[in-house]
Amino acid sequence: MRKFLIASHGQLANGLKHTLKLFIGNVEQYSTLCAYDDDVKISSQIEEFDNDLSTDDELVILTDILGGSVNQELTNKYSVRENTHLIAGCNLPLLLELTVLPEDEAISEQQIRDIVERCQRSIVYVNDVLRDRCGSEDDE
Image 1 (cartoon, rainbow, N blue to C red):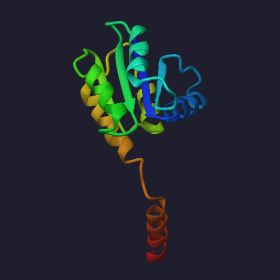
Image 2 (tube, rainbow, N blue to C red; image 1 turned 45 degrees about the vertical axis):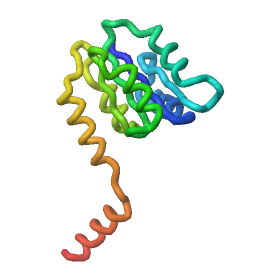
Image 3 (cartoon, one colour; image 1 turned 60 degrees about the vertical axis):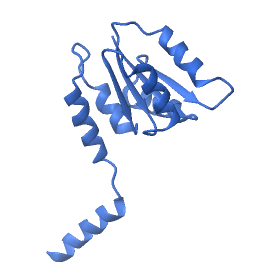
Image 4 (cartoon, rainbow, N blue to C red; image 1 turned 90 degrees about the vertical axis):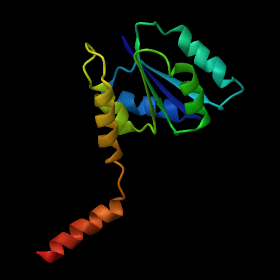
C-alpha cells in the first residue's frame, strides 16, 4: 500500500491535507506530522507514525523546507528505508500530482523527478505573467 506523510513546522501539514481533501475526497492514505506545535517531541511523532507502517508499504514523505529540522529528522529516519521517496518543498500541486498516480505499481524515481520539475514551474510571479500578456497584446 502507498502511504504519504506530510510533515511541517506548525500546522501547515494539516492545512495541506485539509485542502487536498476538498479536491480528492478520500485522504486516508495521508498522515500528517505537525512539529513544534505542542510539547510532543518530533522523534516521538515519527515513532508513532512508524508504528503504523509496514515494511511492504511504499512511503512518500513530503516536508516543508529542505534542510529544515523536520526534513533532517525524517531524512535521518527514512533515508535507508526501501520503497521510500523523500521530497522537500511540499505544495498543493505536488500533492495532487502524486495522488493521481496509479496505486498498482511503485512510483519510480524518474516519475518523482518529473513531477517535482512540473510543480516547480507552477510557482510563478503572476505580475510578470500579466505583464507578458499585456505586452504581447500591445505588440500586435
